[in-house]
Length: 244
Image 1 (cartoon, rainbow, N blue to C red):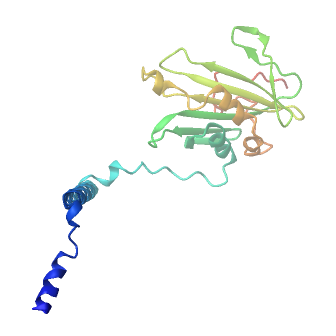
Image 2: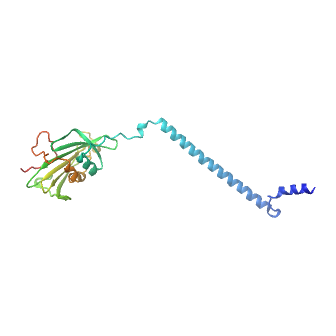
Image 3: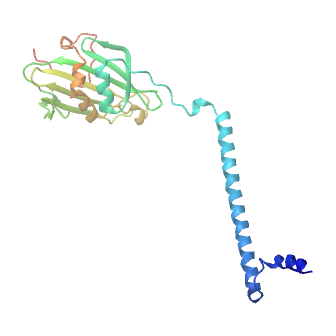
């Protein structure tokens, strides 16, 4: 009998004391309710993660890979210092454009972020000894006030952006010790009727940065020049006045 009483008494070991039994019952019910809420929230979070993972998996399988991948861009020409200077000055991607080069000039196509053509860049080099007078757009009889750049260079900038069918920026820079002169002209897509498409791939300031970059000048041999205005040399919006 004593052994049975002892076993029965253990049933009430976890029960609250008689004095505060009601409060203990409510506390235990509250803990149970909070535990159930936490379990429900955790289950909802797991369901959301599973749905998102399933959606991503389906999108990866069903959507063509070309949507998420950019158009491959052609690799730059190895050792093309003119190209490297243009990309550095403008923060853009350029590729040779056919016809791409000749004695004293280079021609490139600028690419947009999708790898599509967005305008053209011409680089032409001259040797101009003696005086150096670049025109002023508002007064062709006046000489432009030249700006100075590092490496004993002077330059002038030009910009035509009123026409939605064709916008142009150009910079002409001269190396003072030997009269070596380079012109960088950037033009947008022509005849589109869209101002954004017609916008040149280089601003006038960026064209000047490229024209005064020693690396760009090093991309031409000392014997290269367009002084003779041969048919192969492209025409610029502002021609370099030559003094022989």
